[in-house]
Amino acid sequence: MSATLVLSNGRIHTMNPRQPQATAVAIRHNHILAVGSDDAMRALLGTGGEWVDLDGRALTPGLVDAHVHFQHFALGLQLVNLDGATSLDDALSRIHTAHRSPLTAHWLQGRGWRIDDWPTRAFPTAADLDHIVPDRPVCLRDKSGHAAWVNGRALRIAGIDDHTPDPPGGQIQRDATGQATGILFEDAMELVSRHIPRETPAQIAAAMQSAQQYCWQVGLTGLHDFDGRDCFLALQMLREQGELGLRIVKNVPVYRLEHAIGVGLRSGFGDDWLCIGSVKIFADGALGPRTAAMLQPYENDPTNTGIVVTDKEEMMEKVSAASAAGLSVTIHAIGDRANHDVLDVYEAVRAEEKKRLEIGRLRDSISQSPISQSPLLRHRIEHVQIIHPADQPRLAQLGIIASMQPTHATSDMEMADTHWGDRARHSYAWRTMLDSGALVVFGSDAPIEKIDPLPGIYAAVSRRRADGSPGPDGWYPEQKLTMHETIFAFTTAAALTSGQADRLGAIAPGKLADLTIYSADPFTTPPDELLDITIDATLVDGRFKHRTF
Image (cartoon, rainbow, N blue to C red; front, side, top):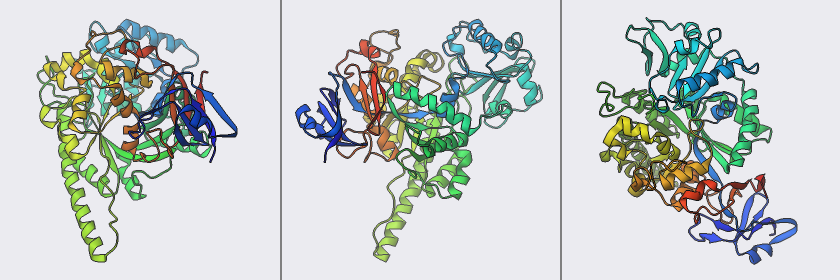
């Protein structure tokens, strides 16, 4: 059998323990045919095949982002960008510029502001917006996505006044006189967002086509998505049209659980381009707006222990139902209380799963038929941002996947020190999780952070920001990972998490030919120079989707 494409003269990190390194790889159509030396792979090239000289470039399995809001990332490329705004005035200036643009729609939307980046560290108000945008509704999500800043027009459209009660799982911020300030936390954001006209699935699909081009340019070949129904419809449109060029694991919002069970969806259903992942539940909020659920109050905020978005009893009901139907679950948990409660729920559900497995084995033995029970479902915790020491071993013990985002640590480190104090040493604890035996998979949480994997890789091995802060050792340096562990978390771990390790996650014969090519070898590049590396090519399904040489 001959190769249709051979890549040679490279530094290939296969993530295959049987053959960790090579210089060349032979591809036949969309699968890896063989891996080995330059001469041996060149000998496999068939008539009309293509030979590519990597000229010493590095190659790994295709990078996968295991936590993305792809619809919001795609549409976010069209919104007011407040990320990096250094003050309220800076944010207002950007908003004013966008407001004056003839290209913006009726609702002015944006995202990315963060009060911890502003000198005052005070929340903005509707009055601030009303001075520059008095005549159209405005809704601006913060960087975490767990708070929204709206103007007076938006409050009036939503019917929010001094007497509006806080909705379950949310909070309307009020001033000393009881008036709504224009800041909405967690589920209170829905009071406004339900009035914003939704893009059609066709519009979302169009935005995704541009967004996936960006993903290829930064080395991504796959995503685990956490948006809702419209996102799924748009992805199906792209798949049907043959225009989906990223491998997508689609997670299901918990409010669609009844429907998913009703039609018999199970985790893993689909194909190599688009398949069902887990059911997504929110346990709590986020660090930025101080809504992450904590066992003890935030520093200098003695009455605040965050917001419980889904209480333990309801969480147990949902996870149990999903598990019984063959759907794994993934739960957003930031605070140490949230992580503790989630682990308690998973412990109880694992006991249910074990009992079902034992009953199934007994039934099979009686009927003398083969065992038909599936292996344990791949349940996840998203973020695991701060976890109490007593809970740290429990993910490994229960077989729960730690889905974490390296750039959250370097982005949030000052907030973590400020709001969690000494507890911050137990936050963003990748090394702790890995050493406990838990499977750690990495992503970005885009658009909350940049979707680009290279900054995440740099953060994981250095615990530093791009400017070198907080110093040469990094923030809590004991939590650093090696380059191999980091690339594993962006490749093989993603395939293990989605149940696709037989086809993805390594460069080995028979695997799908999804590859990322780097300008220099990240395994030998000094940490200070990692951010100088560029993505020179990305192959998906054996085809170049991005190439600079």
